[in-house]
Length: 575
Image (tube, rainbow, N blue to C red; front, side, top):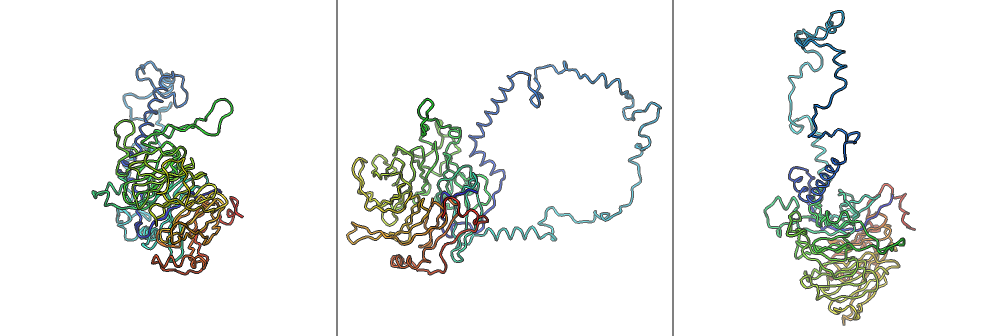
């Protein structure tokens, strides 16, 4: 059984609803889903009508079910039933007395022995048997009104308790694909009990590539439509998902068993039928394919990265394999048609790269500034209000991940396919990429690609990386007094058994806790505070940040037990 987790996202404590709601497919929900999918449904209806008309012009030689169609203009009286004459010869009915049964040849009634004429005049028999007093029973409209039925209430109460999420619990969202079936798996992590368990899941239509948590209710979500409160004052618990499809889906994490997302950003009617066209001509085809014609209103290829603006909460940035970065306004209703053929699409579109844009992130200190990284081996940072005035750097390899340093407004990290991690100061970067753009320091982090990267929001100068060498590493970056040189040291490294590491992320609540996942389809939570060396290396920084150091027993790794863990633990090259 092959499975993998492509990305992981944390949800802070106290954000999730204590008792998640159940998905209800009522008339309002049907109307909302129909509005979100009206483009697809309308196209399907038109195609069906066209197919029906085409079938009507193909002649009358159809067989089977298709032969049942009748031309309305044709005179039905021209058709003659060949069996009518034969039936008239075999049976003679009494026309004047239609209610009498037919007689046999000797003149006796065939059904006389059953006395059917007196069937309804039988004397009423007294009620007997175990149900003779059924008229005296009390009826209830539903089980809730029946005092003797308590099982249903007990089941509902037990289910309510099982789904309860306490204010001290974290939520982890994992984008998992198993046997070509993709879904979002929502886990609950109880740090005090060191317990990680699956809560519920949401089915996805395509392979997921990126996740981004946000608290802004999209305008098409049921919660936003059910209240008249201004959107800026509304808060929720949502996850945005980018997949191999060009559309972006936004799901509520407070609804169990949801069947349709709260919002879909994109135009599936324009992108679903795309067939890649190979470059070149003749028998020898190049492996690369032609780029689909880009649009300023929607993506036309896979969505590789997402970033939510925590200051301007209605804004979501996306990076795509179509070489563009787009800006979305979650207060714009995508179901409303605008001028032209584009409708209410993306708010802005940026063409700052020449190849697939692998990563994008907003700057929390300067909320109008974006950082992007691409397969064209460059990184760019620019103000979304004036993208042409941006700066950048050539990094020498395909970009895997990027992160702004939350402790320094102008600093950021870049991890590359060759295993290197670079640190830059955006103020020192040139606007012309042909100019030299040296990094402040270079870290040889992994033997293979450095596919995962995150910066600790609680401890200054603490980063975590993960690579295709299956190792997760935590690094300590110390600054000299002159702030010109930085010393980087390895704090701790470990193979967490997740296979090739595709995602690593620090906890938003615990300073020394991180999550990792990868090609083995496993999610692991690692508290590095359980290691004495890590506590010693980061103890002083924890004290400076006002954080208490919690010593824990055990190895500090918490995962979810799997039924086939023993049989599949050595898959994908684990040794």
